[in-house]
Length: 131
Image (tube, rainbow, N blue to C red):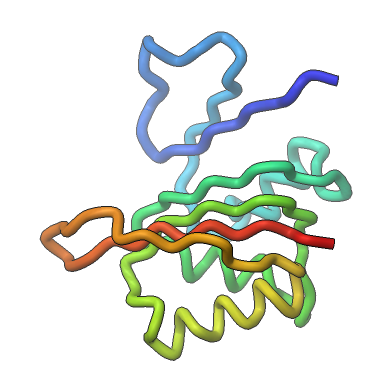
């Protein structure tokens, strides 16, 4: 079947949005508008998400908390790319990676320094499910 492409932003959709992209204006970190909430709302709660790319400027902690709620992985994700403002060696980031491996069965296969910003370094992490 055809892939569905959804994008989420707190900003209004621009005119350059491709016709195949379904745009959702939202703010992650607000109760009821989390990633798992949106997956349920869009009918994907029990579906496999083939690619999830997150660059959500500070709401990562909220998304991970929701993803790992109940000590389980609440979405079936095959490939995850995420930009992080946290160093991979920080205990918080190490705990997130442990949960991605143990709960979601995702293995890190790449990590790059994306660029420097006024808040420090940005890291791009890539994970894939290998089972």
